Image 1 (cartoon, rainbow, N blue to C red):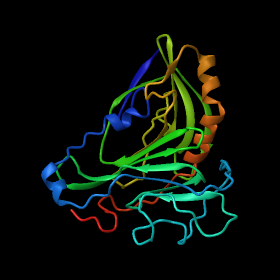
Image 2 (tube, rainbow, N blue to C red):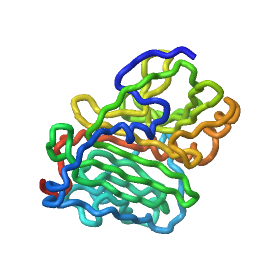
Image 3 (cartoon, one colour):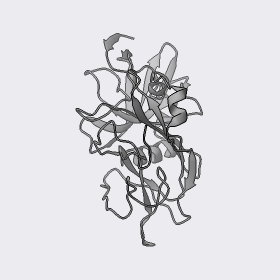
Image 4 (tube, one colour):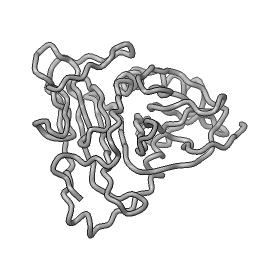
Length: 263
């Protein structure tokens, strides 16, 4: 296996972008700050449908949760009308939107924290779970990472997105006698090197990750390429990729706080 160096990148799992995020929290300051409490909600029990790669989300003021919207912040809230089958979700400070099939559960552990220089920073950490147990984790906040990228990899599935250079994809990376498996929103790296599971918008100082938890482990690996490709083309992975492909970055200012939260 040949290796090349590139920064920023992460290796070997997209979930490790969360582990490499270096954020120092000042307890004294947080004690004086308003902080959103973790919450869990589930979309109403209606017939569910899986979004397709060709579907383009249409965002209207009524269903979209924004800083001034009613309802619990950081949770999926269905718009009016029984015919709607997808539920819009928006982070508490409005950095990201996506669409969930109704019945998915949202666990929002977002919080007020600090950046490397000790300035207040809002960090979004959200988990999405399907009724069948498919899990997706999303993060955006302050962080960086560095690592090695492999040239021994293979992309199995890919969904186009509206973010330039970014798509929802599943891929394997070979390391010795193991094939590490990934399903995430990722961008292409240097030609011939594996995708990078970090993304964002130009001139917006936020690190974003959106990944599927595979085999109950953020370092999931299997014993052969055939096994990796079978897993990465399975129905749960395809479902997760369809959901992740609806993700939209809004480009809000990095210092934006949710309504009612002041450092």
